[in-house]
Length: 346
Ligand code: PEP
Ligand code: MN
Image (cartoon, rainbow, N blue to C red; front, side, top):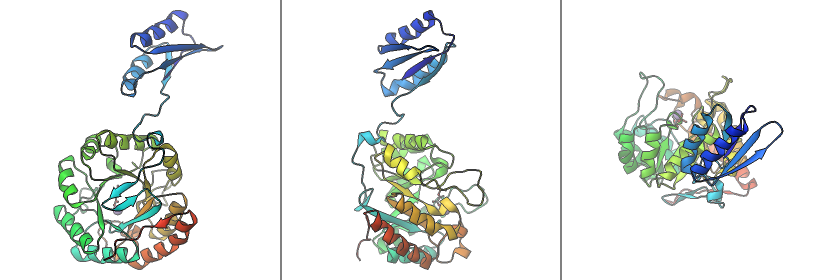
């Protein structure tokens, strides 16, 4: 880390900062500039950095302290230069193949989920999505079917040789959801729920972390760091749009996050163009763009009758629209030198 001294700092004060750094057991290397002095502190372990930075920043003659290494280590690209492939019971996410995860926003009934899964599987999706526990801005709107929803998802996914991705919202439900799901989804609203991140870090079930709608890429990677540090190496990231001043779309889908995450991290990154736009008419174009930008997969909402959906009907594709989406991304998948993962035969 680098300590930038205030312009008015005296020789005595510069010495004081050097002495503190040395007393902690690290090297202090001052550089005397015309305007101000900076002191490089070397050898400070990552785990201690935040504490020391805070204590130095509290000194009136220190202007600021800058961390040099990134605030995440296990999530960084340097940690696994070749990239990570997360194995979702035989479906590889993060390799050469692009993986499709699709299904309803919410598990409403057996029949609705079955119809969506059947169409998604036929079009090429290997992973069935669907919410059994739904985060809702309003406490009056549908909260999901709970365990019954988990059973429906598992049962239908097994009929079609699909894997299941579903959201877990509560630390008390992690083990329960993991009994039914192949990927534990952490929703945008919970990206900074550190207890939940720690809890899924204890599991070995793959975890998909949605980007917080307010979160910087660095904060998102630090959320992943919680899970990795807990001992769960199976982390997938999902860009789902962030809040900006634009209101025409539900969120602003930040596709530059895809190559940015690839630069900074070894973790697979997928894109959710459904929450990302909030509008059915925009989903397919953004799915094409996501694949072109290097996404390792897509998470798409598909409903047999979107106009009857209990949640997110406006952004849900019909079954035939999803089939069309897959047809449209195929040439783009090939153009970026990849292949579409084919669902298990059966
Ligand atoms: C969802 O996938 O249906 C969902 C609620 O996602 P997000 O957490 O990104 O809003
Ligand atoms: Mn949704």
